[in-house]
Image (tube, rainbow, N blue to C red):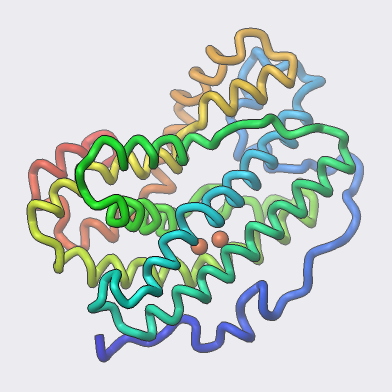
Length: 297
Ligand SMILES: [Fe+2]
Ligand SMILES: [Fe+2]
């Protein structure tokens, strides 16, 4: 890995948590708390018009809570593993050093997401619905259903999450109908995540060829489920939100939203960079893995 060039060389000057001021400012009445374009549920006929802004606020909460739980959970767990000399001992020491920089970035993102959630809650009086995010349940299920090393499963789960480009990170910054503080957070977060993306892509490109072909196959067939865990609709959480928005039969409306054409288009859009990365290492030359990906391709 002599050619490795750290993406974190200028971290002190570039990272949100090291160099940028906190986004403060007032919430402007009449301006959305989340982008209507990112909320397919908004267009379901069962949602009463008077609940639409409340639904957008809840979508913001789901997005922020997702960030807090993902980044303080699996992502930072894996960053600590990566720093350890015993885990992937062949990894360039500069990449091991950078793992704690990512850890610090993610803790910062969790804090800024949590603080924004608390200020919106205080301002609007809308209380977030308590829920266990779907991706955490799916990670626990994946670890218990395989006899692969759980650290390896978690590592791939994080490689997937750090290389998917979610529609929220992509589109929130440009939507001028959304509160400035929400867009500002998305902009600052996306700037850091660009560096994380490059780091985890490089890590994946070194890791994949080193794995035994049988291990590769057993991991490979789990990857589509990992991608859906992040990109698909969290149906129980959405159903709880819809119930709080006076929607009748919230579970069946959540199921409609999960299978709506608009939702499936988001999944395909978000999956694209990760699929490209997988294709570059020849992952789909293995017919068993390629078959597992049929739905996502
Ligand atoms: Fe992050
Ligand atoms: Fe990240």
